[in-house]
Image (cartoon, rainbow, N blue to C red; front, side, top):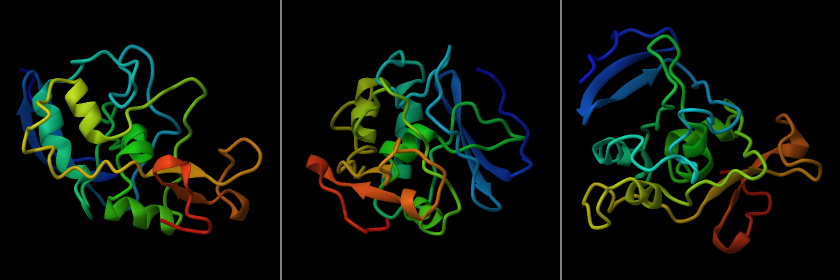
Length: 188
């Protein structure tokens, strides 16, 4: 098993590292709004929220330990697997599909502290944390994922053009509810 990295980071502090198979689950605190990638990672190590990511890329224990990020009113964030101790990042796939009930993310979006990531055309994400965790080996009845909300709230931009313009009055994020209903004028 690899050793955990240093305990100090430029934009935040690593406050805990727990082994999960041959990987580490790192908990970090940020001094301010986090860095969020513009879209879910691709390449050799794609974002685990992508349906085309290889199942088992991370051990089931990593998903069990990260499940509290999707509990109702959680203030924990699901970190991007490309984070380093020098640059703590929040997962773009999680912001798009798993953070609808996360109190801290709702505040960051409401205050304009983060931009909602873009989902490239043709990229499909799991609809909920539970679905992603189960696809990666967590048992459906595992108590760690039972409290995960996963009620289908997804972020998107309100824009008539391309759906991902920079943040301005015409392109505010809104919540998309199950069945495609939108909260007209609703700010998450």
